[in-house]
Length: 196
Picture 1 (cartoon, rainbow, N blue to C red):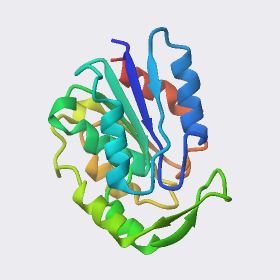
Picture 2 (cartoon, rainbow, N blue to C red; picture 1 turned 60 degrees about the horizontal axis):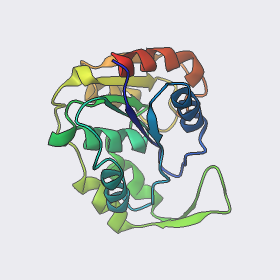
Picture 3 (cartoon, rainbow, N blue to C red; picture 1 turned 180 degrees about the horizontal axis):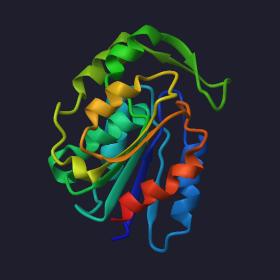
């Protein structure tokens, strides 16, 4: 079944201008009748999820897919585990598993990856918001998920990702990197899952 709605959630310090977000937008534009949304997420996790839940509030219970990269994968999991969204198909790309722990050391003024002139403050309150958003330890239905995990990820531990998404469809890549610069090679597997 082809999805009618697709949400893409970018990672920390990233944007809809990332290579993966742009590639998903291109793919979505080639799918007749598919509504694609890829918002610029604010630094505040609470504000980000308030924005996203508002965007999808009128979306159907089925026929929806969400794909998230890195922190976006954490957000996608949180969103997909909400009771109203438990029929959604999910793709996570090098997903953050414990971003509250990992990002606590990045508190301060940061720049955006795709536009270093854009600065934002990442605060202890934001870390606390991440901790509050932590999804359940067990996924309600791992078969809904596709996890693309790179052993060459220089920022996140692939073993932790693999344990978190055990039982899910997907691929474990021997190399690659956090940004999945070889994403094009693995897009067909993700797309097959989203359309299943």
